[in-house]
Each structure stands twice: as structure tokens, then as C-alpha cells.
Length: 531
Image (cartoon, rainbow, N blue to C red):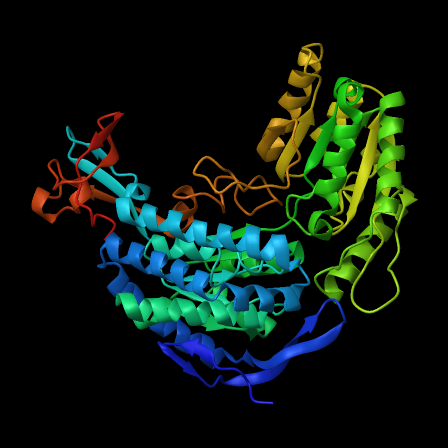
């Protein structure tokens, strides 16, 4: 079987391969689709050189043209939507409809269009001006970016289509996409459309490049290469930390989304008011996509009492009545099983599930575990093991003080949720819990499960370690997501005619918010100030 071509330096060409692989259909456990190359360092080296050449041109490219590329790419994706979602369905077993076709694909094209708007208006540059001292600064593109996407969002977080890709391109950074091995065909289809859009709009040919898989040592070498500006990575904690160590040693930024169990605190008043609704919301959130969301509610904190007992009983019943979905891969299945075993060995009681299911493909029983807060505090590290999949752990505390001690032992998470009474009788308790929870999560939610992530400039899809590698940045929302792939550039006593347009005292027509002499001011700027 002929190996698929890589996209390097503006050409689809034969890879310098050291091995080959195929995707696996999670529903059958059998290989599917064509064979793909495992690239040697030669391919990485060529891609890096080409990306540097592209960056030299993109730095001088008007933001309007970059916006045109992103919008044209979104249009091309929509024209090929059926083939893309069919490939993603086969490679991931995620539901074709509504998940892929009606939810994730529109989110993908929506992100690209939001990134286009950010590139067009240039506000992401955050120009700051001190006229008295004649010192001015702005954000500018950092350099070539390597994007490594995850297995659970093949479209909206894909290495050649997702939020990291869109943000890097909008900031003027060429992208070397490293496909996830679970869905190489899906990624190739995206890259084909992206490359066509590059040619149509007239961007540098190596603005978008694609490699499918690398040897571990070459992946470590890539993120540390001096020609690379930064890396965006979404995936497992173990792999991400190895990449981070390599990048850190070379002084290279790497933005990681790694691990999150997303604690949900259910206060007694909320359960008394609306038990059935909360059970429904939790079960739906926990089992959605077979639990394979980075915002899946993997830890539920309760106060001991009749309400918590009823909640546990009803969730067990619902878990047993719901047919388990298909997991993304054999690796996800093995890791989920190992994580559940580790939780049990640390003292968690199995309420339901806890075993692999027979038959073709990768399936695991819907799993619910329980542990006392006292036991959790004896082994907080082990009992925070992320069981990525259709599983969750209930932690039952004796009182509010013990509940807050559990929260104080939590690692960083993407989200934290509190359900409280709507009658105003739990405000003091809510404030106590929120005070402890707030520093440990990127996004605090009230009375809603954390699974959904809206694509808006106000969103923070980030958080303290190990949710991400840096608590200051978000992977979702334009323009804040662009800031990861920029550098702060300062101009000191530079004459007006030598300044970038957005840093001059008077600007051509257009609108931009600028920080001038200690206050935000909406100023006129050129429409191509994203250059």
C-alpha cells in the first residue's frame, strides 16, 4: 500500500519515512484507511526551513489578507464537510450527527471566522503608548508554530483546523501541523483544503505544512528547535510533560492542555430543590461523548446526608440503564481501566461499572466510584487520577470545613462548578466554597455542568497546572488565544515614520482600542495594521 504524501515547503511529496501506520476504527478495533508515514528528522528539518521562509513573508502580510485566507478556508471546509465528518466518524467513532456534522464542524469554521476578524482588526496587538516618554509597545507574531492536536476533537482542536491553528495563523505565524495518529485522514483532508486556500489567497506556500507522526526523539527535538517560535499541544499529561521538558530546556514556549477532572460541588440545598434535574445534567455531561471531554465532570464533591445518598443511588441507576459508547482508541481503553484500578487501590469504592466490555471495538462500562473525604485527604494524589472516559468519582465530606480541605488539595483544573440553592439560604456556604475553589480553576461555573465551551473572547479554556502548562493563557476565544503565539515588542524614541501604523500618534482610517497614557482609547488605525 502506497504511503500518503506529507505537505512540506508548498508541495505534497513523498516522506522520508522511518516507519508506517494506519488509523484504527474504534468500533471494530481493525485498521482502516490508507497507510501513513512516520517521518524522519529530514522531513522536520525541511518543514522548519520552509516555515522560517514563510514567516519572513507573513510578518509583512496585511492582516486583511490573512483574514481572507481564514475565511476562504472555512468556506472550503463547508464545501467538503460530508467527506470530512465521515472520515472523522470512522477514525474516532464519534457520532456523525449531531456531534461531528452539526456541532463540532460549525464550531471549527466559526473559530476560523473569529480568528479572521481578529487578524483583520488587529486589536490582538494591544498597542500601548506613553507619549510623554515616547515609549510604545505592541504584540507581534512570534515565529513558526508547531500544533499537536488531540484525539477527542478531530475538527475543532485538530492540528490543521482547530483553535491553536486558527490563532497561530491569525497572529501571522506559519503552522507545522503534526496530525494525531488516531485520525490522520481527517487531518489530511483539512490540510488539503487549507493549502488550496493558501494558494487562492496568495499567502506563502509553507504557511501550512503537515506531518503525520514522528519518532519520540524527533518530536522532542522539534519542540526545542531554535527555528520554532512555539508549540501548541493538547493531549496526555505524560507525553506533554516530556515535550515541555525538552522545550523548556531550549527556552521555547510550549502551551499545553494536559489533564483536568473538573470538580463539581453539589450543595444540599440545590439537591433538595432539583434532584432529578441535577442527576440528569450530571449523567448527560459525564457520559457525553463517552466522557472523552477535557471538561468532563470527573470529580463530584458532596456533603454527607440524605441528599448525597439519593444522588449516588440515582446516578448508579442511570449509569446502568445507559448503554456505554465507544472509546476513541485501544490506548484510551487501557488507560481508563488502569486509572479506575488506581482509584480503587487508593480506597475508592466501586458503585457500578469498572470493567472492559466484550465484543468488537473499544468499550468500557459506565463507571461510578465513591470515597469519603477523610480517605481522599489521606491519598489526594492517587484519588485525583484522571479516568479519561465514562467515569466519575464521588467524594463525600462530613461538613463544609472538610469539603474545603478537599478543595485545597486539588490540582489545577480547567473548570470548577458549584450548584447551590436558588432560595438564598446557601449564600454563605457558596461563598466559602467558591473562595477555596476559585484559585484552582480557570473557569468557575454556577448551576451548570462544565462540558460545553463557548467560543467567545470572554472564555478561559485554561487553568493552573496540570490543566495547562501556564495559567495565564486560553486555548479558546479570539483574540486572547492569539496572545500565546506573540512576542512583546517595545519601541523607545523611534520616530513616527519608522513606527508600525498602530503605534503612531495619527493613523489612517480604521478603529482600534489602544492603551495611551494610562487609559484605553478607541483610535483610528489602518485596516491592514495586522501586518
